[in-house]
Each structure stands twice: as structure tokens, then as C-alpha cells.
Length: 245
Image 1 (cartoon, rainbow, N blue to C red):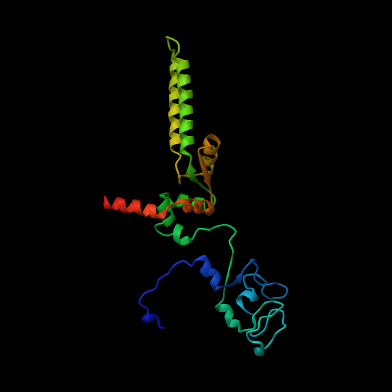
Image 2 (cartoon, rainbow, N blue to C red; image 1 turned 120 degrees about the vertical axis):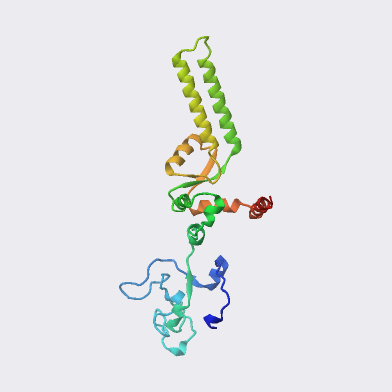
């Protein structure tokens, strides 16, 4: 097939099943070449068992040498007797210890993840790189309960201040300060919402004061949890309704 004969090309992400199907083995070490033997490390990035022999028709341990053993898999080192050219074509895989974000989706323009969550891309990168925190869910019942408790405390203190017939300037000042504090606290609580991104300082502050209201996390693992809970069909329906209006 010639390049000029191509009419279109489609690029897509490979599924885990497709990757495992293409792979010839799992890479378990970050090592490449052993400095003593000058041979590829077993289970490393240049592993002969996975990618093929480093010498034509010769296995890693040297038990099989020569074209007459072509296609034989060594029972000692597990290397197939074939040409070194195989190393250019074979693929291995790595089992990730934790999920990662694909650069197409978080650094593209526009960032698909940031767009979907309706958050700034720079702040989202902070979550992916374990700098910022993102709120996974908010317990609305706990939020209402805390607001009610704070309101009751505020009313009680205001009643205590204004109990007498005459209110001094100091009491008026104290009452004003209480109102401002209540207003600020109320705004803080109502400002806690799903997918809100917090800095480490904000996260520590909010978790100490209102930890029972929300749960938050950092890293791609948290983003995976968020996306697993999202009903895509329902979100598509919402958007269709918006466009119809």
C-alpha cells in the first residue's frame, strides 16, 4: 500500500485488551543493559524474551545457536530463536500501579477533561500532578445540618447580646462582627460543591472545619472515581435538551 493511495486515517486509543493482545510480555524492570554482561536485563526494557534476541538465531543463555533452531523457544531463558529484526516489531506492556491521565485528554486544546468537569485546565493539571485536590462528592444533608447548627448558634449569641434594653457601642460592634462571621461561614459552606478544585492549604482548612460535608482526593485515581459515577447517556440528553431550547 502506498501513502498516496490512502484516503483517510483514523487514530484511536487502544483498549487494555488490544494492548495485551499485541504485547509479547510484561516489562517489570526499568533496567536496560547489564553493565557487566552487556546483555539486556531480563524483564527489562530490552528483554530478549519479550522483544526477541539481540543476536541472530541465538538465545539469551546460549543453549541454541544457528538458523536450524529457527522458531524454537529456549526452555531455559524463554527466548525465541529468530532474527534480531524482530526487536523492531515486537511490543511489550507495563501494568500500571495506579491510573494515569492520557495527554490527549488533559493537555489538548481544549482539555477534554477540564471541559467536561468545567474546571480551569491549569488547576486540573495540579490535581493530576498531586498538587491540588478535587472534591469528589458533597453530602447535601450534612451541609444543611451544619448550616442549621451555625444559624442556631448565631441567633443564640445575637439574643444574648441584645437581651438588655440598652445596647452599648461595644455590643453593637460585637453583633456586627458576629453577623459578618456568620455570613462568611455560610458562604464558605455553600461554596463547597462537586468538582471544586482546592489548593493544599484550602483543602486542609476545609477538611478540618467541614470534613463531614465533602470527600476530596488528588491524582488521576480520584478523577477515575469521579468519571465512573457519571452517567454519560444522561449528560448527553441534558446537552441535547439545552441545544433544543
